[in-house]
Image 1 (tube, helix red, strand yellow):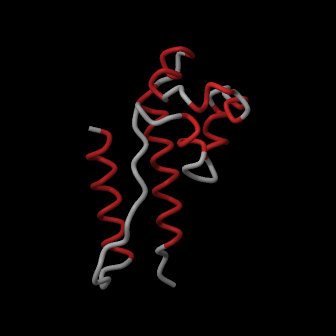
Image 2 (tube, helix red, strand yellow):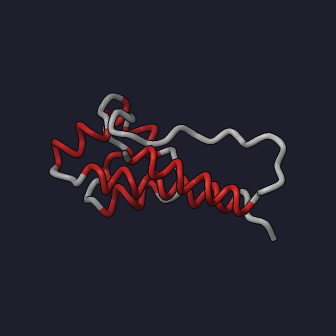
Length: 103
């Protein structure tokens, strides 16, 4: 459900920004519950800020970041998983929007 909503939102934005491209750009994988913490942290500039907002600023240094998924972390730390994943994906979306900004 999250993936479908983000895909629709991203597609509409790209269509509005870059309607005349002949080949669509390759987009990064969406963040989902099975995404490793290390991958989520590297997904956008705002990811660290999003983790810190949920009182997880030390994830960047923790050895579990290589193995633990967002779903596991959400369960272990009582975080609203859906909201967290949407916010991380929105950060990727904003980065892509900046990349394709038409001036």
